[in-house]
Length: 261
Image (cartoon, rainbow, N blue to C red; front, side, top):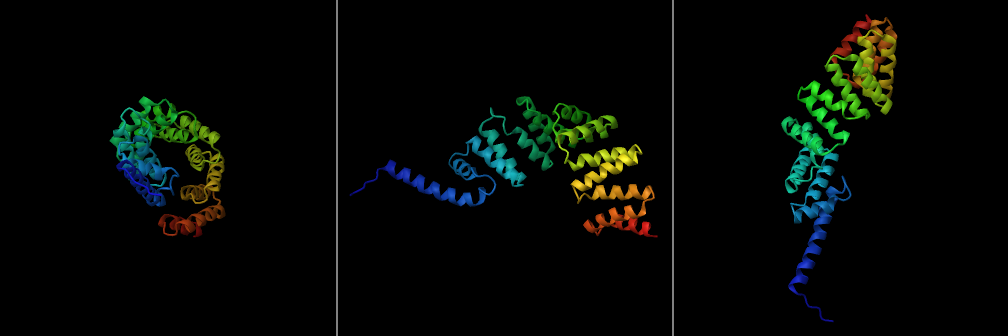
């Protein structure tokens, strides 16, 4: 049987075979991060103005830890479709991670202006905190809802504002949302230490290092708390755990030497 190819046939098969090879090549790299990314990559190679493809690749790169690559893809998605503000919050996060604070603020405000999701307020709060606008950060984080991560950040902002009561409430709300959030237990323990409530401080810090056994700051503060209370053996136990994790920490070694005298 004789088969003849028109120019249209030729174009179709060239696209199909070439596209398949591109998908195979890109798939080896991109599929590790996100199953659909090979297809998205092929699509944006054909049409760089495909906004959804650029955004999906950005999400995959962000998940893989490539903040710079993700930032470029989010910017490309926004340029391709300025009416779609979906990338704003993700763009703000990677810009913040890269220390691009002006860019992060613009993207976070874009997210808040076009999305009533509490996550957008959380991102804005984190950006404002990084810029030193603690009051603005606390206000945004208070609007971010009762999610554990947002409440943890709100507590940190309230401490910076000097409102320990509000900070304590935020940390307890974070723990209610996620009892395994070690940083919230740690921060609650620090508040108790500052209030000279040693029993609560010890209990909270023990929970923190139980949840996060490599939390040096928790081990360090437990050792200091026990040393001040005269419980030398317990202080040495916490110090030994900390030193095992950070043997080069001169401060920990000095404190241990002083306890052994």
